[in-house]
Image (tube, rainbow, N blue to C red; front, top):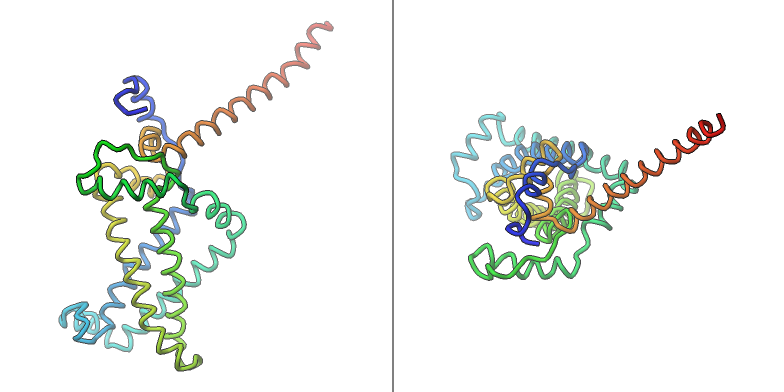
Length: 265
């Protein structure tokens, strides 16, 4: 059902009704990652001094070295923040692996037939083509978000593994040290490339503004959920109806003994 075919009263109800999408742990982890990357990315770029790469102008590298009191302190800061980031992420995954990570991976990360079709339709639509072709219904995370999650997971593993080799380079064999730096760079650049699209879609693209604010409140409107994550929306509606049926059954069950007692009197 298109938005135009939904009655006005129902549209107003959906816009005011909020649905929980993100748990507090997810929100805290998200913004923890943001904070870590705001420190790691610029300091990492400043550490790279090769003029052939040209990732940052000389004055930026000089600025960071002056702020941290030299290249050695800059590298030490980058390594320390990186280790904190890796330890906290590892702790979160180990603690919630069976309860959160495995169920989330099974329910939210696997690509479906609708996801494949979405990937074939959405990019052309963003460029102004295939406007008349409807997008297939999506889960709590659309196909693009799922693909980026794959990039983030693989990239994070690559960053942490290569970062540990570079940090503790004296205990690793030469061939690992030779591969560590290019693996680190490729992993970082892969995540950053997707991050540019992620930030644009979440913070700039008008249709996705609710996705951005949901990372503060944890909630999205039922209207947004129905429009952008229809599969997930009907899943939440089903859960709500099942909960209402359960409560109704419990109330009726509790009322029966009282009715029997009154009949006996």
